[in-house]
Amino acid sequence: MAGLPGLEGGQAIADVIFGDYNPGGKLPITYPRYPNDLMTYDHKTSEISGLNRYNPQYAFGHGLSYTTFDYTKLHLSRKRLQENQTLQVRVTVSNRGAMAGKEPVLLFIRDLVRSVTPPVRQLKGFDSVFLEPGQSKTVEFVLSAADLSFIGREGSRMTEPGEFEIEVGGLKKRIILE
Image 1 (spheres, rainbow, N blue to C red):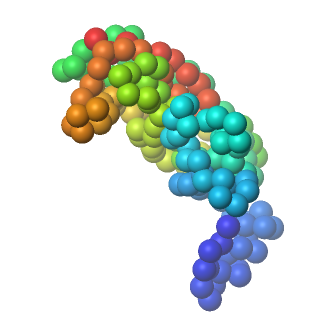
Image 2 (cartoon, rainbow, N blue to C red):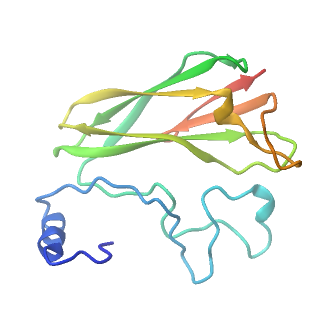
């Protein structure tokens, strides 16, 4: 998608089409498959019923590249998190293709059970790495109990103990907030 690319937009689009430039962005929106099919990436499971389903043309975080990035070694610094602690999340991103490229790394969380219906996942961190062919880098995120909070029934921010799923690049691990 080029939007309104301006006077030099044609050259920029040609550079991408002919492989002279490797695109490295990810969608900040969910692009619907059909008109009025406007369910967002962070929808709630309770919103899916009958004809109302999550089936986007391109999901939030979708992106194209002329190279291939692999995610491995998802590591969490702890399996249990207290209110006053932080959680380090590390993942290794590798460029397995033949072209240098930039990869936006997105960290999502999912609260498995809470007192109000949780979203299926929420973006809680992102970073971007530029990798030459064959190069790997470790990306680190730091989460706190506040990152696992939500707006409760009374309209104020709160945290609840429970199990959470951390997802980066399709890799998933679980932690427990105590």
